[in-house]
Length: 152
Image: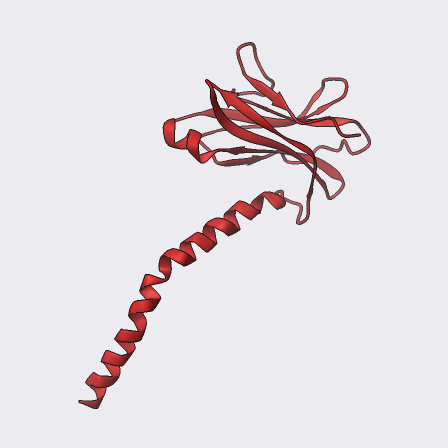
């Protein structure tokens, strides 16, 4: 009977742990959201300049940001959950643009949440992060584009 009592006590303690699992899922979501502070191949980046918003069809599709770190500039594009929940597919690209209008380090993908450029060696130049709803590697006629403010 003692064994049964111990099992019952352990089970009673385990029930609140199971109820707490949704909180753990929320913590994981928060950690994923903070992943925007680290680019692939660079452990520490800092946002420079403003955040730009890509609006497609009257809806905010994505946020576009520029980061610096590890001797490079990075562009970052995040597709908003509201857009993802109302669209079954999408294409978008992000890149660094120099003051001469040259697209550097474009990255494009379909049906993703976050997209980082791989890093452009442009810290000595004036740059902007560029985002657009297309297939790349540069914006084409009909693509909707947005740029962050220029950083020198």
